[in-house]
Length: 304
Image (cartoon, rainbow, N blue to C red):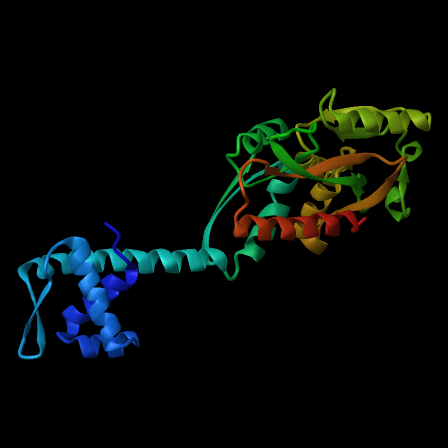
């Protein structure tokens, strides 16, 4: 059986109006064209749908039954067409985002909020996880976008990589805050908040201190840099942190923050990547958000 959308449309309008000519006018088609559509539909179904009586098209009992089926099909097609149009214009859909802690607490929610201002029916899943978990999720094609520390090259993911220079967080009241940049020598044996042993950022920070003959005194060991902001604010330590955390702190507190951020030398970098599934075509929505995310990361790169 090979029913067509136009056959069902013609059938519905003839049922509504009781006239081929009225149906043709509504559908903006010729009367012979509508008659042919009805005849072809009857041939496909193998039953008569109408009987002509005094110039009117009188539905058969079979037609009265079939109109419910036809309207359900046409309504479903109309709904599907509207839905696909809304997805194409990004007014509907779903984004699944996995994000490392540095960006998940402030920067990413604010970015999502701006992106969704004119998209009230778009749904978002935002999960904060360690970079290793995010890599697995993206590689298994479960999530649309991941923001992680740069992983090893994988055939299962597409990666856009960024090199971000870390900055020094210190109390605004600290004498060092008057300097344009902070060196490892400035922080010789000063209490520091840093990431756990073996983390690439900690290794690079220790190497920077060693390069200037400065002693690295890690007072606080943290899973991520966000708790360090409160410790720095209370004058307990300094912190060489990633610029995404710094940007998030600035945007969250604005002028009320008692922390300042200064460029740090020798240079310590954090490698960050936007990951996408390699074996699943991206949605229009995911593509659009990825462009917004790329722009935001480049903006943060240029802040300090």
